[in-house]
Each structure stands twice: as structure tokens, then as C-alpha cells.
Length: 159
Ligand code: PNS
Image (cartoon, rainbow, N blue to C red):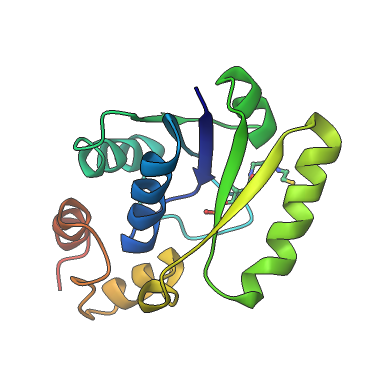
């Protein structure tokens, strides 16, 4: 039984994240999606509880996916969850340098390896920060996020 951990801010979860989790759920026995507040990314829109509730709604069709929230090190959560690997999505070469550095650091401090999965090219431009910005300024993000997220964005940011 292979369990993988997919960590992220998910503020909010978008269709690229959903694709990653669906792919992981088809490749591995168990997927844990862990969300946290990333202090290096200012301007959070959704609380951790709201993000969790949206993650739960988005993955209720996948019985081998579980969601959780955490603070502290991602490798601590990986060990607590007995995850065999951390998984990360790569959208473009620009993601690679920082993700490689994080993967190497996480390996050095814990022995937990990171596996990278490529994002489909039609979703490679998606980024939560840009989605928040477009939605805040009244742009249409309907095709970029799952329906429950779109609904919550409209409630939070009425145009
Ligand atoms: O969705 P994000 O904000 O790009 O996800 C970043 C995340 C959560 C993967 C990263 O910030 C992280 O791992 N944070 C937990 C703290 C930690 O373990 N730091 C050391 C990383 S080498």
C-alpha cells in the first residue's frame, strides 16, 4: 500500500491541483492532501478551515483521498501520516528550481523522497495567487477552479 502526501496552500484550490490529486489517486493507494498557511505568501483569502472544507467538497468523489491541515514542517506531516512520498506538481521549468531545492532539503532532513508529476499543459498557467487577483478585480475565473470554489469566491468577492 503506497501513501503519498500532497502539500500546499490551496488558497484556493484550482483545477491544476484537482488534476494532480486525481492523477495521484489513480497511481497510489492513498493520497493525503495537506493544507497550511504559507507565511511567505501574503494576502491569504480563505481561512484554513474554509480551504479544508473546499478540499473535502472537491474530493468527495475520490474514496482514497483524505484531507488534513497542518503547520510546521511538511516532512513531519509526511511522517505522521506514514506517507511513502511527498508529491508535487510541476507546471513549467520555472517551478523546477525551487521545488528541487525543497525536495532535496526535505530528503536531507527526513529521508522522505519527493516525486514530481507534470501538470497538463492546458492548465500550466494556473496559480492560486493570480486567480485571487483576477477574482478580486472582477475577472471571470469560472473555468479555472472547481464549482464549489467558484461559488465561494463569488460570495467572498461580490463584483
Ligand atoms: O502551495 P504552496 O504555497 O506552493 O506550498 C508550499 C509548501 C506548503 C509545499 C511549502 O511552503 C512547505 O513545504 N511548507 C511547510 C514548511 C516546510 O516544511 N518548510 C521546509 C521546506 S524545504
